[in-house]
Length: 203
Image 1 (cartoon, helix red, strand yellow):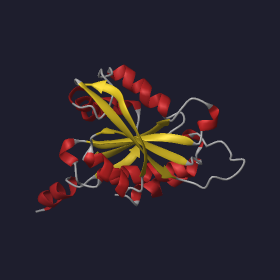
Image 2 (tube, helix red, strand yellow):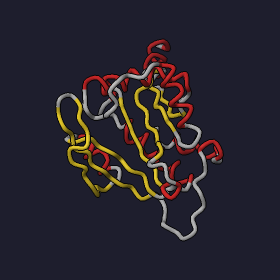
Image 3 (tube, one colour):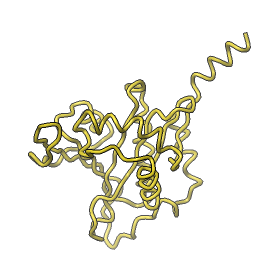
């Protein structure tokens, strides 16, 4: 009886945490099919493990990158990235979220995005943008449930899988637009004591 109970408990071991370079393989298992089989990302070639490790490391120098583990397997991930290069854009960032097919509809994406945007708010960012390659009704509905609002569509801005694609932009306001804002805090410099409470309340 005890063995059966332990087995049932094992089925529900879950964890949100900061990504590491060691997660590159697990993350790519989720991401690669989107590159090769969809236009939801405009990336054309699947990165090597080494390239993806570098990507994770570089993003984490400024922005959060989160993974959701289910029984030791990466079930989904979400991260933020630079919006544009010019210094005046530094208070804006872009976000992405991907969930493994077998965990779709379980709330993992919402949990990751909620944690991600709370961290970005603590860092001092004002806007987070979601860039959605259209049509993608599922992603649009998801982002709007998370509070994002559409504000622009770039028509025929990308070409992939034999079609010209439109890209829609959605915005979520994180903080007030105060005068003389301080530069956002880089993620490694953020008070890390907040993170466990942010993650735990979303499990």
